[in-house]
Length: 219
Image (tube, rainbow, N blue to C red):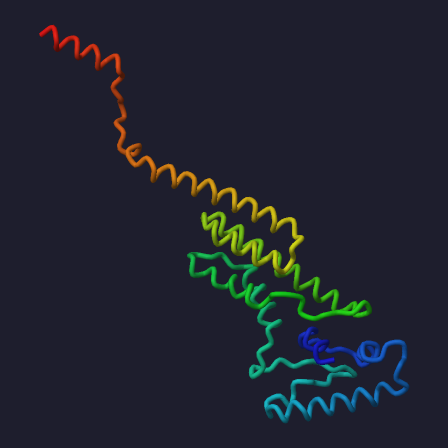
């Protein structure tokens, strides 16, 4: 019940929808009374935790709603707000990438575990997973653009722990690995042959050297 209200974020949920959620198939002969009793007890429990939580469950025109409270930090709200921010966000430097890293911290799996009949949970899980993948993909692409391939690979690995079968993330991982290997190979060749950078622009051929030697002998 509380999870349902929280995930509807400040939107009133009508009593009838809550009856169907809590007592599907008409399992309760007096759902209205049962719902009011449950809400009353929950409010009392919240007050025991903190007086500031007394108004978290609000009532509005035949509906209940979760009222956001500054004293209560809800990670799913932070996740949603962060996604909205990243939607308009253009990083200016490496330190700006910390916003994406917060995304990884907030989301590690489905927000709720659902049974076969919990269609609303399944829909919410899919919604948040798609949000996560959208901004993780953007983060990885930005890392590759700035040639931060090791970071991109680590981000791909983290994302694949959430969804091992995501083809787009797998393609990004393969791309980052290939570019990282090419960069490492080029760097390795440069370290083995430092004189290449100092080579003269006009090399002298062996024939020219022999001609110069013959000329000096004639002198």
